[in-house]
Amino acid sequence: MATVAKAVPQPVVPRMAPREDLNPFRISQIQFDIAAEYLKLEPGLRQVLRTPKRVLEVSIPTKMDNGQLKVFTGFRVQHNIARGPAKGGIRYHPGVTLDEVKALASWMTWKTATVNIPYGGGKGGVICDPKRMSKGELERMTRRYTSEILPIIGPERDIPAPDVYTDAQTMAWIMDTYSMTVGYSSLGVVTGKPVSLGGSQGRNEATARGCLFATEEACKVKRIPLRGASVAIQGFGNAGSIAARLFAEKRAKIVAISDSRGGVYNPRGIDPLRAIRYKERSGTVVGMPGASRISNDDLLTLKCDILIPAALENVITLHNADQIKAKIVAEAANGTTTPHADEVLYRRGVFVLPDILANAGGVTVSYFEWAQDLQGYFWEENEVNTRLEKVMKRAFYDVYETMRKYHTHSRAAAYILAVGRVAEATLVRGLFP
Ligand code: NAD
Image (cartoon, rainbow, N blue to C red; front, side, top):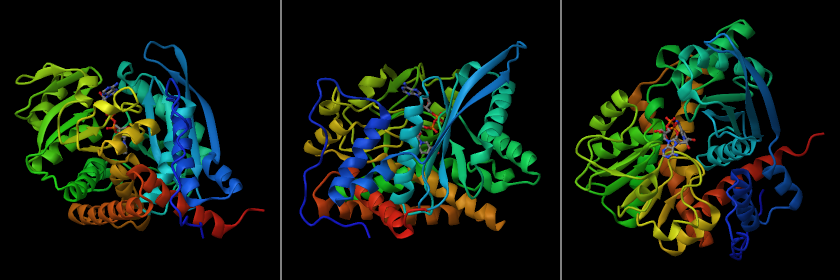
């Protein structure tokens, strides 16, 4: 059993540096260290839990449409598998680094433990610019990447899923490449697949829906009616655009949205369905009629009830934490808030739904998808959503109670819960050999 501290120690965020360290892996280790300190974990166990179990870097030679060969670099990191197979998405982005993938893999370990599903944490990434690649180039790169990481993935080992700039089509290529190599159709090797290929009903909306369920509970605790609440959303992809639609269905008012090109703002509300149609046509929400332009930076500090960062890491830092005006920050994206910014938001009474809770709906329905694939028995969307709601609500109150017990902020509480669970599994398994 992981020992639980009786006294309430102070968090161990390093003294404020003149410039914040924005390296995502070091940030993930600080977040871990805070929980390890509360839990008074042994130094050896801390080392095991803060280090990735397995790191693979691969070269991905790809034939481009102009006939030339280009070699991309990709990674797959398995951070921890104490509680089950590694699980985590694959990101295609020019800014991917090994440290980012290591951080994202560790966040997956803590996320699957926060919502208590039987997985560890993993993540993959390829350094590429998918917006400048044709579908054929993406398919060839994806298939070769799959073949390079194939020795360490599989339904019982490590199960990838979509992340930034990868989608159901990417997962279908991975599933096909894996299946052709092993010689049979393996549905359970990836999640986030098309429904026609063993995907789950509700998976596409799951990250945003989970975020909505967690936010509904936060609103109850903070006594903010969701109906009529103003919501600003940064990032308008899978997580952000679907969150806009689902929050609007609950009669919240979407006052600002954005993507990599900038944002738009209308205090009277933006219709998410119109925004989705506009983005499909123009490739961006910028320029959408009936809303004025706003920068990504200004969107974050807008006066609103709920702020949903749904793009990339490190958007709430020491630089802007004291200007955040939202009452609730629901982190649909991973790694949005730095440890120092967490302290500032906590002091200012902003209720943060940390990423490892707020966006855990995606991996939860991925787990449902995997369970359905392995059973060969598929559920209706209603059943998926009802089960998701149960998992998210339970996780929210587990975190909330831990927050009250330890008198700390919600991220530290979620980490205490998650690290405690993984530590317990590690200790009970014992050390091999
Ligand atoms: P996506 O590729 O579907 O969308 C990303 C969005 O972010 C796009 O609208 C893009 O324009 C925007 N964006 C990119 N750079 C930006 C910038 N600098 N400023 C503002 N916007 C920018 O990706 P997604 O799947 O929605 O993932 C978004 C976040 O959610 C990531 O942090 C991801 O790890 C996290 N997440 C996703 C899932 C999932 O199931 N898709 C699950 C859990 C967490």
